[in-house]
Length: 66
Image (tube, rainbow, N blue to C red; front, side, top):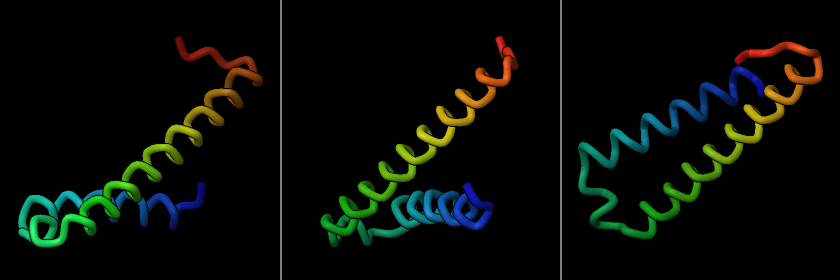
């Protein structure tokens, strides 16, 4: 995963949380909140897939973390 993608994903999560906490935008436009939550879910799934891939790579190299 590239650095730019990681920075974008982190910025999106922080921005989403700030907009939700400090404005009434999502109360006024509920579909916008649901769309944002779908993107948050996509970020979490992508992060989990990346972590699983890295874990598998470490295991194949014989590195034990536990």
